[in-house]
Each structure stands twice: as C-alpha cells, then as structure tokens.
Image 1 (cartoon, rainbow, N blue to C red):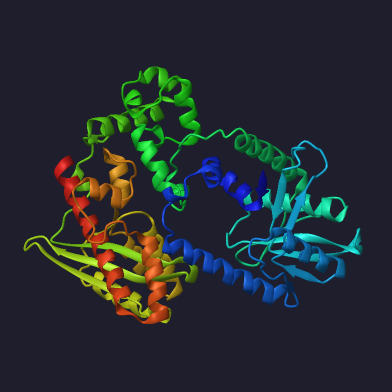
Image 2 (tube, rainbow, N blue to C red; image 1 turned 180 degrees about the vertical axis):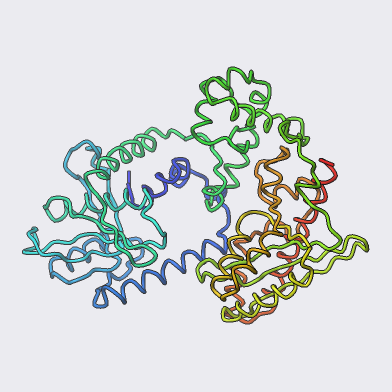
Length: 487
C-alpha cells in the first residue's frame, strides 16, 4: 500500500473521496472544471510569490516523471549538501519502524511532497543542521487537513534525519506563518492514518453523504450524487447535517420518505422539537413534491415583500482573488407596463470598479422609492464595501440599504419548497425558470472574467452578462411566485 500526503488530505476532507481515488472507476470521474484549474494556477502563483519573498535562493528538485525513488534520492542528496532551501522535494520511505501508526507489511510505503524543506541549525545524521517542512496554502486559515499533512511530513522527516519531530510551518494567503502544534496534531495524525489504512486495506467503501459546498468541487460529485438520489439519501434534505444524520439513523430513519412519516414527538426528544419539525416538513415537501406554507408565518406578505410601480432586481458577479466586484447587474421592472430592462454595469478592467459604482448609484437613486430585490447577504455586504472604498457618504448608503429586500431571507421565513438546496438556482429551477446556459454557475463567471482579462475575447463578457441577467430575472421570477403562493 502507498500512503501519500494527497491521499491523507482527501481522506480528511472526505473519506469516500479517498476510497474512490484508490478503488474507483476512473471513467466515473467528472471532467476537470475550469474553476479548479484556475484555483490551481492561483495556488502556484501564491507559492512562487512566497518563494520570492522568503526563500529566493531555493534549489528545486527537478521532476523525474513518477519516479518517486529517484526524486527522493535527489532530495536527500541536497539535504546532505546542506542547501538552504529545497523546493518540491520528495520523501519516499519503506519499512518505517514498527509503531502505532504504520503497518509492518514490507509492501507499505509512505510518500510526501512538502512544498519546502528549510535548513535549521541543530543535529541530524547530515551534520549540524536539519530540515523542517514548510507547506504553502492559498487558504486564509490553517485548516485541519493542512495540519494533518504537515504532521505527516514531520513524522517522515524525523525518521529520515534520525531526529525528534521537526516543527512544521504553514504559510497562508497573506504570507502569515502558522506553527503547527505537534503535541495536538501528531496524535490526530496517528488516528487519521490508522482509520485511513484500515479502510483501504479492508476495502470498506464509505457511504455517500452529499455536502453541498464541499462536494461541489470534487471530481466524484456526479457519481456520488447519482447514488444518493437512487437511495433517497437523507443528506439531500436541506438541514440534515452529519451530526443530525447520525441521530436520524439511530432512530431508524434511513430515507427521505421515512423521515417524512416519522413521529415528530420521538424525533423532538433526540434532536429538538424545532429542528424535528423543520426536517420533517422539508422531507414532506420533497416526497409530496409541493411547497408548504410555514405555519408560524402570519404576516401580510405585501408588508414583507413590497410591490411598487418601479422595482429593481440586483445581482453581482465578483472575482474574490482580486477582491473585485466587476459586474453590478440591475433588472428594472415597470409594473404598470410590464416593461423589463437589464442594466449591466460592467468593469472591463479592475480599475473601472469605481466608475461602475457611480453609474450604479445614479440608476438606483433615480427611483428613490423603488425597492431593490436581491438574493442573499452578499449584495448588502458589497454595497457597504464599495461605499467605504469609494467614500460614498454613510447616510447615502443607509438610505440605499433601507430599500433592500433579501428574498432568500423571505423564503426561509415563509415557505418550505421541495428542493435539495435553497440556492437561487435550485429554487428558481424548481419554479419553472431556466438559465440560458444550463450547468453554469458563478464560479464559471470568475473563470470567464479571468479569460477576458487575458484574451480580450468579447464572447467571455457576453457569457457573463447573459448569466447575470438570468440571475436577475430568476430573482424577479421568485418574487412573483412568492406573492402568488402566499398572497
């Protein structure tokens, strides 16, 4: 068995992903998404900037295809020379000493590829120096999987250099270093390795659990999602978290249908009455394929969701890596004439963000009584950010935000729909609205904008504008449905 850093990283994120990476059918993997390629490129840029800033005199271990043993030998040769910093080194070990973590099987190997090995003063088998691992990540915080892998590197380096475990370091997005506490994370590494090796050696396939944000970036997503649908898996019910799922299983509730028909009193004793009612009603909506008005909603819907002669529907496209909101899309609707006009305020360069902000303000303030409908808190936070960045008077921002109506919050308050997710796309699709580019999402717009900046190809901008307009129209469609259903 070959235990690698990449396998441990994926196991910590999702046990099933690690299993499928080893035993899965490659033909069932999803095609590589543009967004993942972009993230990989951004991560490499971050690594290079870290090298230039902190370790400009590094020596790189040249790629030797998949010949791990040769790369490991080349890495160890540089360590013996005592070079200051080694980039893309490889640690490939067999027959580690018997301990709690690793099997004694001679066919068991460990492979680690730390970003950097940095020389430190001290004693090792090489001389009066040793090497500590440095991992470079684009994340803003030191995630558990980063620390597990860093502890793995430390363990391999301790054995290779015949020294106590060297303290690993993580360098994150803002180049801020983070020292990994091995007194805590080495124990967690031991548990993780034992669990992972046991699962793989016994070929125990973990069950499916669809976690929307985590699974959306996995190359096994469609394969697992198809299985979950065929099983009526409870993870497809909004609100079923891993801990709640375990509680529902212990009550003998294994499918969406069984959850819909369960005794709410018994469920409430285990997971709380409010949560039990919420999950059961959600399951009932899915099984019966119908929306359910929440019993506690008693307000006048026209007070909660206003209607006016002129209404605005607002959606944003952003580039998180640049901290840039490059498209402020507004659909202007005149109710009496049923006229709809889309106004895209698009920054064709990052420097034009301030210009489109002023253009946006001019439009929305031309109708000072028009409500501004949006979906989620992001639009509110963006208005605050842009107002502060471009020195818009705070009173002006307050007046503007007082007109904002978050339809996501209204949906959650008023109604339960037969959906697997309360995203705009999931809700609007379930209500009969369809985007002109099926299967596309906001992450694809990020890639299109990046490609526009590199190529000046207008087709990328056209695709972004089409997607953003459909988002605005989907918000309009959702608002109309809510008024009709709850009116």
